[in-house]
Amino acid sequence: MPETVPRSRARTDTELSRNDAGTATGSNDPVDSDGLLWMLSDEYARDIVKEISEDPLPARDIADSLDLSRPTVYRRLNRLEEFGIVQTSLSLDPDGHHRQQFRSTLEEVVVSIDAGQIDVDLAA
Image 1 (cartoon, one colour):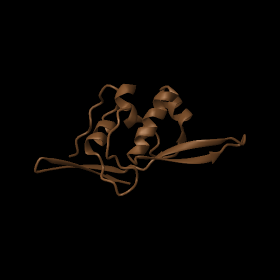
Image 2 (image 1 turned 90 degrees about the horizontal axis):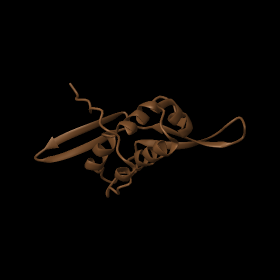
Image 3 (image 1 turned 180 degrees about the horizontal axis):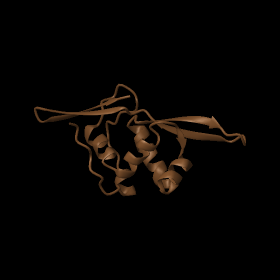
Image 4 (image 1 turned 120 degrees about the vertical axis):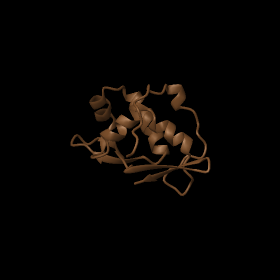
């Protein structure tokens, strides 16, 4: 039975802004296992991924639905996009404004431990 990640304290903005070298951005780059697990340990990031797993939403709607500030949502979305977990698209509102929408590409995270090496694979 898969283990669930316990809800932990939310990461501070300083912690989220740290630069994790080697992150995957949808290319064939290797996934930074430590950085990805660290990102998914953030309760706000997990809540955002769940919120946009069915339908794409603008950041404003995500923030309103989760009762988070927009800057908090945008910081998490940017980091999730760096890891290839979130994709963005533009939509045209009825009032003529272009809005950026976000959707999760994540379907599964597989963590493997072999000979002291931890590997993380993302299924999209």
